[in-house]
Length: 133
Ligand code: ZN
Image (cartoon, rainbow, N blue to C red; front, side, top):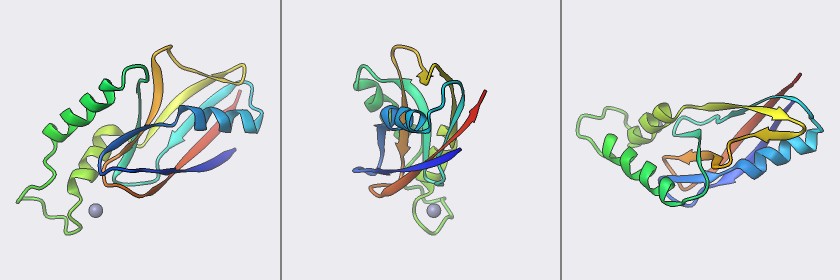
């Protein structure tokens, strides 16, 4: 079972909570138990699981990512000008896996699934693959 949904990002660097969309996919497929893989088919975006309560955490993650990776570096060779986005995408990762139990994603009380945009704004896609069991 594979489903895809769209995400519209609004900033060059941005974290967007996609937990409810992923949960909706699980619900729409009628899956009670299994494993859910969330996969981002882009080279300048990614996905992670982190705190969904205090929005300052999103700010701090993006701020520190920007300190780690220069937006413009004279030594970058990639001609598209978005090397920072590619590097941040690799640091974030392209997929996360979640447990589905009784038709619900098993997440800690403070956890959410975040789409990471590193070369926006633009339209993006999120693939959700589910294995029942
Ligand atoms: Zn590029």
